[in-house]
Image 1 (cartoon, helix red, strand yellow):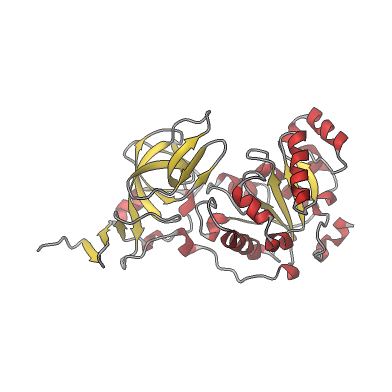
Image 2: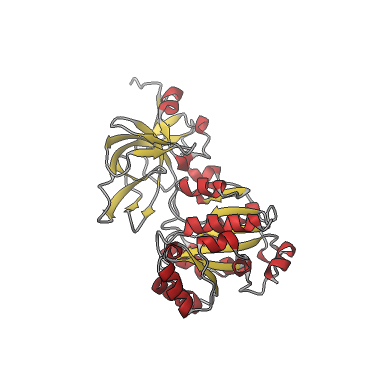
Length: 371
């Protein structure tokens, strides 16, 4: 029986079809795949059951909310129906956009994030348009049939000793999504740089997108990493051991290379993965102080109470609340914890950001700042 030489069976369940190099090169390549060596991809498997992180070739079938794809360079490329794109399967948790999960099979699904995440969208925020429809054509594979997955290209760092850390870690949390976390990371980074303290910025959880990373770079962070560097398109649905590995990997990759590491944790305090990290002894021992981004006084006080119950002490409030002088006044009337506006971070002493809340030693370069 004749079989096309470009198709070969491996075992009983996997059928691979050769994909010309030119076809892969012509496809728009999304941000989340930026670490992948696409030269490894020589075949496509249209029968595989998708797994989170699997890199796939897809075709746009209907334009919806996301009409541009964020490329590995950061450029947001316009997409048209029929365009082929290279994305990764993943989950999405965004209270202001989509809730989506890895589909059960290759075929029709949705583009749920501009950074390049293919998922089955279950619901969306009322203000968000219907998601962009795509058809996944198959997972990209090597010639031996092994799938191309983001985890294959993650950074490799040795397990670190939290007690021997060399850089001081400031963790930025938010009371909810869009509380101003990324802006706060950038303003804190600039403030530290102005104090002649070198910085790195890392994003530990969230949905793969380059916007935050480019902002980190723009504000002067010497080293910038996110969870896609640790092998994940998103962190939704991960269990604590993997979340801890991501945090340890990203922080460990820059520990000792800078004075301070500013680490952003996505979404809000009640989000599943955020709560898991907050309850992790490993994570608790990794960080030196917590800054809480919040949009209003009540969210700030509620977030503080939530963190108090977990044994954390908030070093400072910041975030979108700084846009309202009246909100800032209301919060300052209710708490002695510093409320740092954008202006404060540009002009004031940064010592509230590096106050110890654990007994772990402070890096020597910060002793004068903390004092």
